[in-house]
Length: 319
Image (cartoon, rainbow, N blue to C red; front, side, top):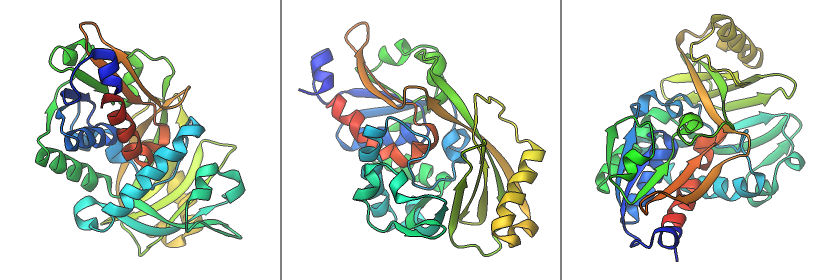
């Protein structure tokens, strides 16, 4: 029996409302719709205004737990993104080479041993990984969901009882919003600030994390822009770009590639990564009246990295 049948006794194909319209919500909705469920997405914000739209977004299991589950979710997602990279103009997914400076294979989880193409060099790890243009990918997900019969509605909720009144199954993909909605006090923001500049000709991505500070250094070549980062400030709710932080980000990136110093700034972005003390929560629980609530939140800095894998895990709970 599926999780839905065990808890509710309902048929496998059911009406589903996914709450949350970021990468986790749209990917989960698409997975369910393509399995035959009648799916609606309720989202407080347009996809372009979600934290997902701000993401870099390089595939890599970064700041996410629990480790014993993350590997499978990440590798399932990697295979999916590799397929989507066959049509980058449509999906927004490209396979791009780059360097994780300072990383070593021995320091990674067991998932790394199941990958091909990770090469340890003197500077760190070189790899060809999915790099996702998030605005394009979110739009692709919306179109694919529509083609599968799903819909997206702009609608905020104050309680899961609201969607439960209209659907047999509710999926919680509310990200940082889960802190108040569930409620779950273990959900907390990890603030990320980015600078968008004109690309001076950089074709490879680069990352370097400083374990002793909230500062990280990375740049990702995306269509028509180069994304510079970043920060990782835990419990920082400030959603406004800080000018001094932006200057520091550009300076750090320019130490790696000096041509970045003269690149014209196109804009600034801030995203609040939805971390959770206990790690990602994918779990089903009964709702009053016989409905099913399935949680899918707490992805921290790797929501894009695990989205397809977590979507499959949710679908298996629902049936």
